[in-house]
Structure formats: structure tokens, C-alpha cells
Image: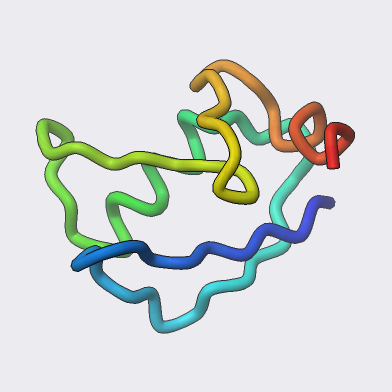
Length: 70
């Protein structure tokens, strides 16, 4: 499991719960889909995910691989 904390930026909606424990095999794309559902964002609307405000991981990257970088 990987602990992930989401923080909103600008006028983005705020999550009721911002910290989650997700499987290390979960992809960034799967994570983005879950966030879209929780935030009520349509698939055609932009959703940008950054790691430590430094870079945007590719959608096919797993959370476990990204976590190893930090």
C-alpha cells in the first residue's frame, strides 16, 4: 500500500478526505478516474496531477513506482 495525500490548487474543488492508502499497483490513470468521480469532474474536463508539486507522472505509471522516487 502507498499513502497518497491530495491537495487542491487554485479554485479546484476540495476533497472531504485528502489522504488515502492505495495499492502500489494502482496506476495514475486509475487514481485520476477515482478523483474525477469524487470531485464530480467530467471526463472531458482537465485534471492535472503533480507529485510534490514537481512533476506530472505518466498515466500508465504505478503509484508504487512513483513512491520509490520519493
